[in-house]
Amino acid sequence: MDKIEHILGLIAGFSDEERAILNQKLEQAKTLAIVPRSPQKPVLRPAKKKIRCPQCESSALKKHGKYRNRQRYKCLSCSKTFNDLSNTPLAGVHSTEKIRQFATEMAQGGVALRKSAEEFGISLPTAFNWRHKIIQGYSVAEARKLSGIAEADETFFLYSEKGNKAVSKFRKPRKRGGKAEKTGISNEQVPVLFGCDRHGELILGVAGQGRVSLKDIEGVLGNRIDDEAILCTDSHPSFRAFAKTNRIKYRPVNVSKGKRVVKKIFHVQHVNSAHARMKGWMIRFKGVSTKHLNNYAQWFGLMEETKSLTDREENFADRTVTQRRKIKPQSS
Image 1 (tube, rainbow, N blue to C red):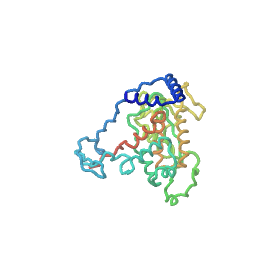
Image 2 (cartoon, one colour):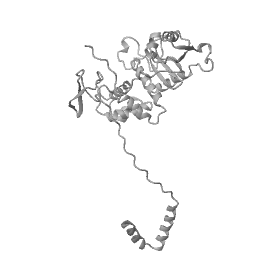
Image 3 (tube, helix red, strand yellow):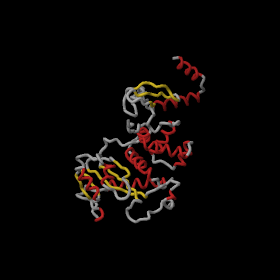
Image 4 (tube, rainbow, N blue to C red):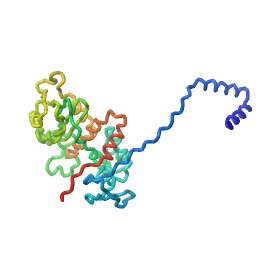
């Protein structure tokens, strides 16, 4: 009431012109819809993840002092000491917030390393290390499988020793890009094997060098195709052998003879489209070293998986930066 009396006291001192303007404003205010204030929602805080030993996955731990203000733990099962960042891409990184922002930029496709280094105020080697720490933090869950009609095919990248200063000891350095000395498919070509289904699932990885073999296909797609799935590939004999060995229903499409679709549903167009998207995306890097090619394949795979999400950048960062990598138990 005190506020209202104060306002009335002010109005009493208004001139006729000022009162007319006030009346006009009040009439306009009557036409506005009054939106009731919605009750405040309680702030939901994410539950803390239970810390486990990165070596043996045991939850039997005890606190083991602090280092740089971060709590360390000791495993009562294997005696390994660690902190909550051990064996994640954040291990040993001082600027944890920066590396998360770096990961969100990677979710959008990434930019040249020099540009990233300048943007985040870090050195070029640090930008390179961060990129690969983040990619290696993402590991495809073993439970993921291709189902329904599954397509598989390979695409090739030229073998590269980019970054190796000793390359001139065993061959002539190539100019950027370059061409293979041998025609056709040879050990100068590195295959990246793609497997996808009609539900949008995508599995990919480097499959040796030269022509893909049954062993190469097993390395990428072994135990990754559902028992009830139908595998559709070109007429490569290694794919036929893979399907037979794993007792998977198989539908070959002889693309070389112009047969692109069988019974209107069996084809490899989805997987070939993924090939084209990856090759188009890779252009920005102006070639990558073969030893890092599998990392880039996994990066592309995660971008494809998250591209339709509204929180794509956050999801990408959560699944790379904070994910604990699997490590092999130490031999006794």
